[in-house]
Image (tube, rainbow, N blue to C red):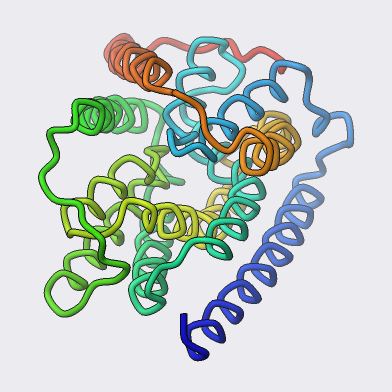
Length: 300
């Protein structure tokens, strides 16, 4: 890596640190304006466990949103319409940690990285502005349909039927334009609670990039877009405070354990399990939308 690339990477990490500080301040201010009490923010063991499991798998490349959505649907600790906001807000801090680690240690061409991150932020800003005002049924239908799409992408990755993949550390011209457009769409879908990891890995492979470059791209994209999308959810109050704190408090140590201690595991069976759970959750979301059922939210 040349000197200009190292300088660009240092500036990107500095920007990420400043954004993390901004996000935490915005979250505290929003909670105070909502007159949330301390006991309203203290997560229980279940909320912490969901954060730990989902972010542990996230750091190893499986993704956290599909897993979190499924666990919330099974346990009933977050109402369906609050799931997108809860995940975008609660997973932000653990994702900051992931992005710091992988941007620092994985080589990727900086123009490609920065442009794809910027595209995802733009998509998230506009996406969150729309989703934060949606009624429950519309969110249930949207999440159900897109979870099925996410499961299909996971299956494609698992069976190894994706053409492409290569050794490139960056993109130029038409391929870079495709990558930017693709990540803009993925950023918007993140605000609906559909994880960026699996489709971003697929996009990177199809464009001929080294698979390792997907990690700083997807984690950097999520780390930068989640605060901007989260501001919209915070302003509308469309999230579960206790569950979001559980994701943060349980997820951050899990990220560090996965990144520095475990590093990698034979996760093929876990990925197939996640596919099955995601499909089940998608069906449950669509059934809830059809029936118009009222959920009873449990404490976590």
